[in-house]
Image 1 (cartoon, rainbow, N blue to C red):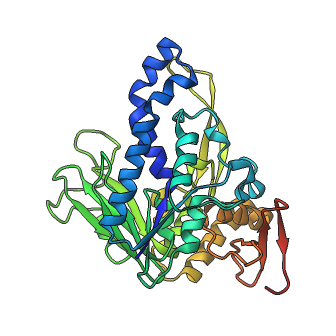
Image 2 (cartoon, one colour):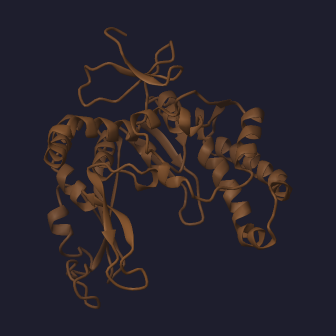
Image 3 (cartoon, rainbow, N blue to C red):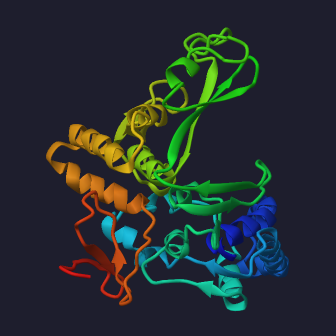
Length: 349
């Protein structure tokens, strides 16, 4: 098996785990960049060990570590200039850049101009069981084939096999008996009302007025998961999906009168309810298009293409390096030219 490793997340998670505990001390003592280099050998040793473990865990015969190009070169910033702008002040490990560079030098690695590691993982993925994507990123669940999530502090390891059109489900956790029901289109209307284990009313909490007696979380994979993402967006990357960014004011408390930004649009439960009646990508796509038309009117095409292309993992790269962009109309052949940093159209491939 060819093991496809998400180098961005793997190296980041190890750097963060080692450095984060010293963040406050470094701030108090005003550490210089060189002070952080003390931790680099431990980071690189942990990265090597993790790569070896993951390849062995999956009985890999070969492996490749994938890294993203720099954000300004990413095709998504051409499609959506504000892409990841909300991450400007997010903390990053001091050793991250050098740890990535050293890992890329030592291990078999790939980085392609214009693309993120996610896209390259999707491009190399096969559906015959000969490859396996290794990542913590839920976005890659839109890709068919084998996927593996390594164990973290909060969650055990997980194996996935994504086939066909994919699926969506709603995990409904009862707060009274602490059990979870996996609801699909067939049993959702009943499962959201009454716990199948203890018969508790899930719509009303006994202790908190106006609150539900359950916790709901949407899970899924494949093309249907991509459509779900088109509706809810990705707040981590500043992608609105079927939503808009609005300005709100705090009404009470210490921040009363201060302005803050809040997304207004389709949420996770509503997105599930919109898509759950459909079993195929094509029928679900029509429902997504309808939501965008209702929200954006004559600008629905522009908005759907912008959101969809930022959320979609590029799988098709031509021999000349052109990267095939997602389109709701599959007959449209539009590509990203990484050398020229612009979108181009081709009559014939």
